[in-house]
Structure formats: structure tokens, C-alpha cells
Picture 1: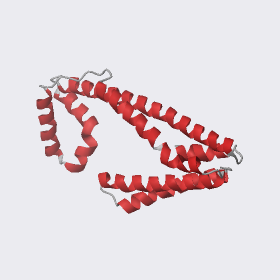
Picture 2 (picture 1 turned 180 degrees about the vertical axis):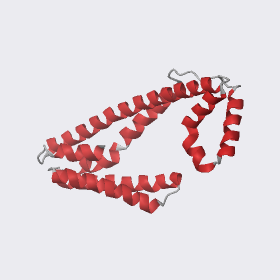
Picture 3 (picture 1 turned 120 degrees about the horizontal axis):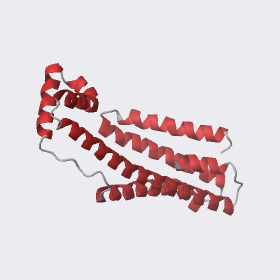
Length: 195
């Protein structure tokens, strides 16, 4: 996000102290706003997921095996199709329905964990701004600071792709390079648009 904001904000700025100050304020403001949005979405998703699972639990406890199996198939059918044959799915679904009879649905209201997660989302978005903004704190040339900022953002994208590959059983170098290509595409588009 900060990569896009820096490039877009640069379009309307000229060289000078005021331009660099404006760039920093715009990037921080944007990431504060997006941090809040991401935090709120985190809370909403947590509440939505609990409501969805509570609804699933009601269906599983309904004593209507067809409704229970249909609900399970909707929830986990794609994953089950990839790893189980039909008799295997039948056994898994039956065991899930049996186990569900002892469970109680979670409350769907906002929890303490939701709030902690929302704050963590906000901080992650906000703090991730600072490496990309570092050149603007130490340089007075807007053009050079912007390009160095772009480079830092692209290195961060590579690092994120490389690390994400560890959790998705993919090649780290390849996923890192895909992220770099996406980041470079954003930079090229904004440069072509005057940023």
C-alpha cells in the first residue's frame, strides 16, 4: 500500500522540504487508515467465522444425517474430495457428526482475542510503513528518495514471498521473484503515470 501511495503522491509534488514532509504524512495517514480497516475486517471475519461454525454445528446436531452431510460437504467437500475416496468421506463425515453432538457453539460476539488480533493487524500495517519511508527521513532529493523507497519495498516483497513459500510448500526463490515482479509492475505503472 505504501508503495502505491508514495508513487501516487509524488505525481503532485515538486522537489523540496515541503514535498518530503507531505510524502511522509500521506504515507503514514494512508497506512493508519488501512491499518484501521484491516483491524476492523479482522474482527468482522472472526465474528463471521464463529457464526458460520455455530450454524454448521446446529446442522450437525439436527439428527438429520442428509442435512448434516450436505453441510459438511459444503464446508470441507473440496479438501475431502482431494484426499479421500467415497467410503473415506462417509467415515469422516459420520465421525464429525458423532463428535459434534458433544460440542456447544462459541459466542459470535467480539472477543478479547478479536481485539488483540485487530490491534496486531493495525500495528503490522503501520509498522511496515517505516522501512519504506526511511529514505524520506534522511534524503532531501524527492526523486532519489522515491526510487530508494521503491527498492526497499521491492526487497520487502521478495522477503515476504520467500517466507510465505515456507508455509505453502512452494519454492521460496520463485515466489519471492513473483512478488518482485508484481512490485516492479506497480512501480512501472506509477512511473508511467508520472509518479
